[in-house]
Image 1: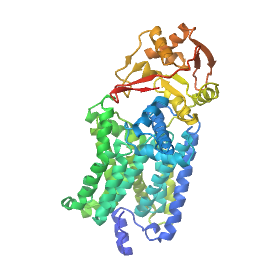
Image 2: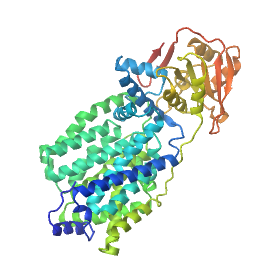
Image 3: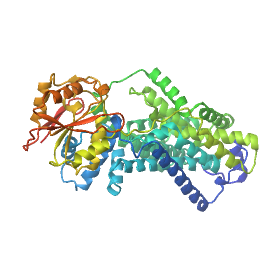
Image 4: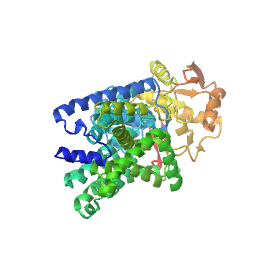
Length: 564
């Protein structure tokens, strides 16, 4: 954070350099009065995020998609490993856990988000709803940090408006209702930026190392944290302090970042490089992210941010430097877009979340500067600025679809209530990655580890992480039936929605159930919500012998795993 000028004259000079004419009370208010306002801001934003989660179906929908269920199940697995007293080796425990609940993705992503989930669920209930409260808390902490920085730079009204504005952006709302690591990345990125701003102000070793540690934690949450590697150079150049490049302290942060964070990135890449299709068009990535930025922020908010950037940059034109905090705030969006433009992975709007945390501050600076020109030193200006920023919440053109309830929670309840062994083998076949919904619902309710949930797209077919290189492992219904009875499978849960039977193995499985009535009997038509029809078949001749489940992991581990 920028050092506070010691005289009122110097404060006013700094404010005028940013295009704002009066001095905010927040800059001179004693610490004892700033703490209650910070806590109040946290409570307000937390309430806003929880309300948006409720409206978005976070507490009633299911964990759909490729990533959500994997993040959640991996967090539960780590939680259970700790709760078990570390009675087995980590790898043996993970392999056995995957055989029961095949949505474990430890290593595909760095571990910190899953470790945080695990720690949370050691004291809170094991449920998706519990994790959503964790996500709301994470976003509320980030928004409160935006408030604190905005208060010191612009005043209380502008800081609060910026915090609320960030909390209600479409991409923030999307992140709040999906179990994803992006909120934690954004929090750590913003904290790292604040640490680097402090380094630019003090040139101290401690501040540089703090940046490196926070950046490493972001990298250990998700690979997107590597974007922070660009921040020191960009922020230092904007601040007009390139002389710091010659100092050892400048390099401490980046070196700590690489030493602590890079090894896991290399390990993760070794696991996923054969599972994803890479798009290496850097120019198209850059254009895509700029378009996404306009879509997610909206032209009005971006327009205010440009106005704020012009006023902030006026100091650079006069003094050839920016304040330390503004330099770091401006550096983060540039670094995020630059990193993702050169990264050969799929484009996603949620990767812009850290950038938008700083863009809302620039938008607040724009509104505050305009208010200064229009209202001068008017006493209610702080209220007007906060109201204007909150009004901007309604100008973003983006929309967020509410999470749907497909009924897999009821399916899991019915399966758990059914009489039978606690280690039954349940094969689930659903469109795309929707089988993760049942896996996550089962892991929430099961006496872990209990039932074996087997994903049809893992044992009847093979593909990479994003569905490419699809390969059918069994060519006809007779071969599939021999495979099922050979494990043996006790129950088959089939999402029999006709329009969803577009993968060959799914159609073959449905045909297998109908063609082998001597081996399988229809025991339930659950017809859950969400326009789906889920049918359950039971083996007519259940086996009490040992289980033998082999899961092909060619595209990730390079070999198969077996559970008995």
